[in-house]
Image 1 (cartoon, helix red, strand yellow):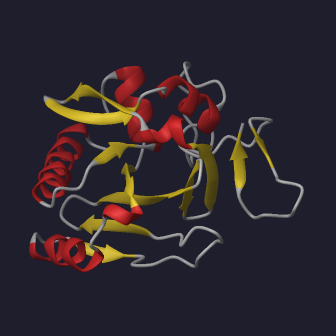
Image 2 (cartoon, one colour):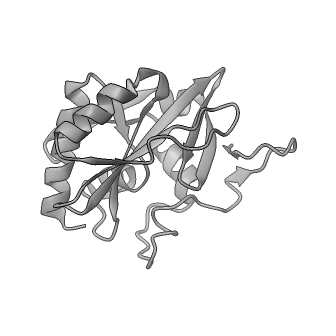
Image 3 (cartoon, one colour):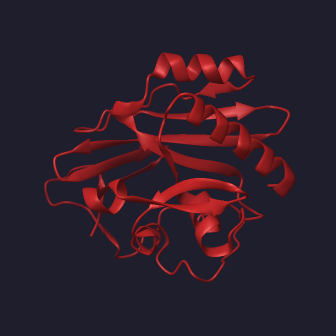
Length: 191
């Protein structure tokens, strides 16, 4: 991503989420770049944020996105029990940057996350507890135990790894940090 365009886009998304009263947090490659490098990852291709499903008024969010010139893709994803699995991607064509707005669901002692092709379950306290950092002059939320989350997402996350598709850098880590539950559930569990 071109940093200047990414920053402008981030400001638009930040303003929009705050105007709707939606508490959001940085996720995936955006979290990794903000925490490790204090900037966007130059070869990342999108902005990733998370919010909690029960906090979202989807009609209001989609209307606000459209009113601000965004196109909304993936209004709903196929449910993955027990999570409803809702996720969205907002696009503003002149910036050519996607913003993945991932909806997390609280169920009992866990947070369920499902995105395009990825799913995970985290202990509730690892995602729900937030702290703020400064990111391009804005205060943003990140998981309190950021290093735990990054380790579960990426394995060895401290050393930048550039790949053509980003799978080693902006995708789920498929090493032993995840295990499939024995009951055949489709979620990957962060242990």
